[in-house]
Image (tube, rainbow over all chains, first blue to last red; front, side, top):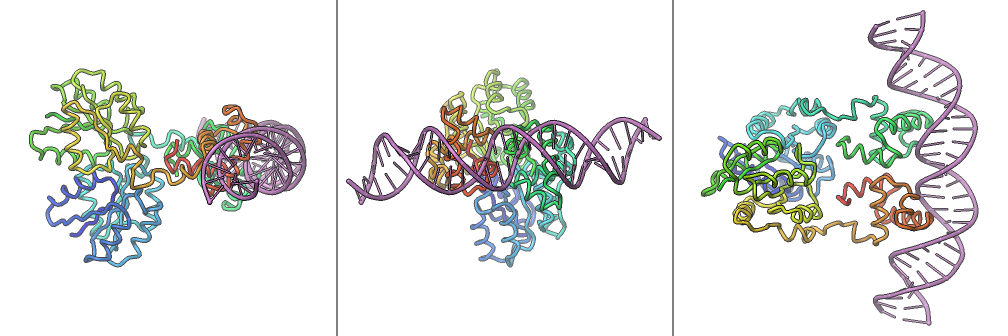
Length: 204
Length: 204
DNA sequence: GGCCGCCCCATCCGGACGGATAGGTGCCGT
DNA sequence: ACGGCACCTATCCGTCCGGATGGGGCGGCC
């Protein structure tokens, strides 16, 4: 089984490759950025699974994954990350990732996940998606209504009220109302603070 | 040599411990958060070196390191991180850390660094402190003037133009002027986007 | 000397934003 | 049935923001 691991954290990559080599029937290759990974895919025989770090030179969010998936010899691509939120994990899975692996995963679980994904299944740790069961998800997120979260999402992309209204098919006054209540709930004085809080909280 | 590694990323921790075990004369122990680490230090014989992840339950920035250093059996404490900036690294060293290890360090360098620190020396990768020589630090930062960076700093705290003007002892029109040129330089359509870009770029 | 970049200030304008108020719907739980 | 909550819309108002224009001062570089 040929596995390609692309991560700019040499420490993890080096030790992980060594670890996987010990596993029966696994061949692990590594790259330190997306460009290197793409080159390896171009050169060699096809990989059974490619693991891409979410924050890594050349990735640009999920764009990097899309580029990788378009290639020959990289059918199954999974995202690995130490900081990404459940929302990003879901986005990755929707975008066709073979799986999402937080770095809080144990080494043993990783091996299982890799085998699982290499067989064509989609993998993601359920407790992570649910918002990390033990660590109460987002202290903020569950205090907000659905609409308010959508506001926050638009906000986190630097959109104006007008743009958000258009995207959600609402009138602008409605957006402004939601904004007001949103600010009160999360303790923001203005939209910039709200966006920063959302980022800080790992939302979006 | 007794080494304690505390990191909530099981993946790295597991593989790293296995890797270090193979090294001659190294005994590696692990904890998944600060509380566990403190407990291990209390229980067992003294460690020659303790590695603490910078972003980890219980750390609270560098406070966690200070708490650890106050303990018996944890003379030398180093910080390890995958995301922290050079500024944080310097702060850690000034606060008495035995070293700072970015996760972009190679496994081999890590072993050398550990031996070095265990002997009582202070370690940090010079290229990282210098701002990652090869990867030009902040592609944006050096395109901005001093004033513009100060604007961005205020922006990153969600301040209004008026507040920024007051803090820097300027008139508001001046702040607005700087903002305008700032937006053009970094390609932001409004202040929220500018703040998000700053965060994304790791500034402030 | 000219030119350019950075810095400071002022005035003006249109549009965006933040807040208040008021009215409407629908759903849920007691 | 009623209150409570989330949701949608509207109007009004004062402020803030983004942009343009026009000043002026400073230093460096060709």
